[in-house]
Amino acid sequence: MNDIFIEQLITRKPDNRATTIKIGILVLTALLCTIIVLAIMFIPNTLAIGLMAIIGAIWLSGSIVKGLHTEYEYILTNQEFDIDKISGKRKRRRMITLDLTNTEKFDRYNESTSLLDSDVTVSAHDNSLVNLWYLTVKHNSHGRVALLFNPSENFLEMLNKALPPKFRLK
Image (cartoon, rainbow, N blue to C red):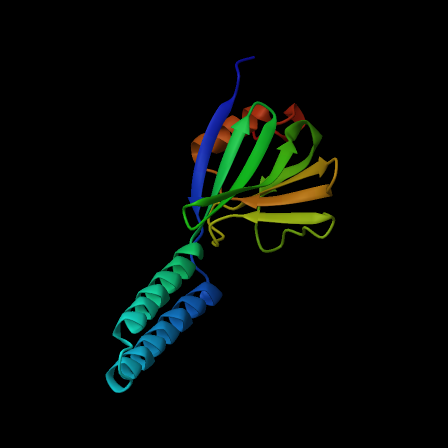
């Protein structure tokens, strides 16, 4: 059998909560900068400190807004399926590693799919129900793990080869 290796990057679409946070941060930054400009105008000798505070507020708000950007990377190496979360295009964290030899379920996800029999649910998808799949795997330390993800056609083809024969798509 040939070795299996494929990676896929998924960008999570912002939900209402993330959009509200971004708007709130931008409004608060504008309000803070306005207050600082007014302080510079009416309080003598505050120009340097005021400009540094404005630059700091803009930098901080930009960092927070950028940090709300989330991507997931799927990495399949033979029977090992790794999921990484990338925040703000700069901070990577391994969410989970699944051993596909312990697969219990694999199918397309829809609204009637129940994941209540799993101990942990890992959501690593783009926030849409388009091409959403689920995989349930018995994990050594987390129990039964359900993974929701959006594989591409190529990734799905390689995943199909890595799964135990009884779970492979026909």
